[in-house]
Image 1 (cartoon, rainbow, N blue to C red):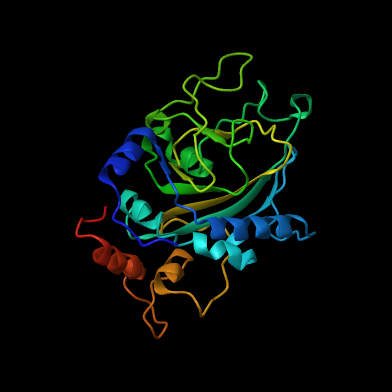
Image 2 (cartoon, rainbow, N blue to C red; image 1 turned 90 degrees about the horizontal axis):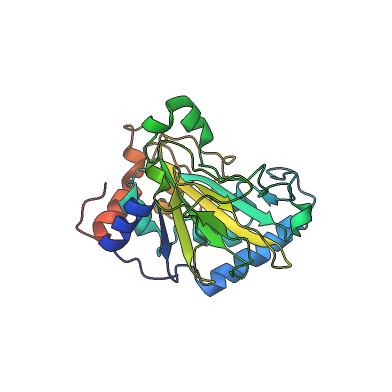
Length: 279
């Protein structure tokens, strides 16, 4: 897609400050088109394995990468991966790859994003429940690829910048659906949004007249359990892609290797990319 570039220190600082970041032009047009076509194909099927539906009309699939090869270029996107490694470390893998379709609904038909159910949340709720908000660090970063046209009525994910450092929930005024300071990212069709597990976010109001399609790719440390069903072995994948898709700490003969050694593909890749140490 693009030649990998060392991450921009100013962008890393912005992510640390805001808990989110826009990477401009990080999605190649042909990759976006193929992924959008695959999304439409999958949603038109009656497949139930991995299907993720909800009462508010949302439809989609968990484990999209394993369902169609059109999503594979997103796994190790060279326009995104350097920033992910710089913000987390080379010891990461893909936790989930979600295809999400949010319908366009008139306000009177909404069951979520209404004052009684505003939808603002943090990811990895089990971690928050087990560790507590004060003790939950940055564990994962989600990469949001929007596959339908962006715009003010497209239902893009909204965020509260800086909310990743809060120890309490965001406050939504009575009768409203958004907290003070909430923003909709101003992005173009080939821009990508990164946000971390502690950043408060919610789906926007989709009034576009068509489904809002997105592929949400979440990366976290390799000692975190993957959410998706295991992807089948693929002989055509490179070492970095194998790591990101869940390769374990193993020697070439299959015997168990030192814990953490399975991160060497990304560690080696990083050393060729930049002399700056990874986290």
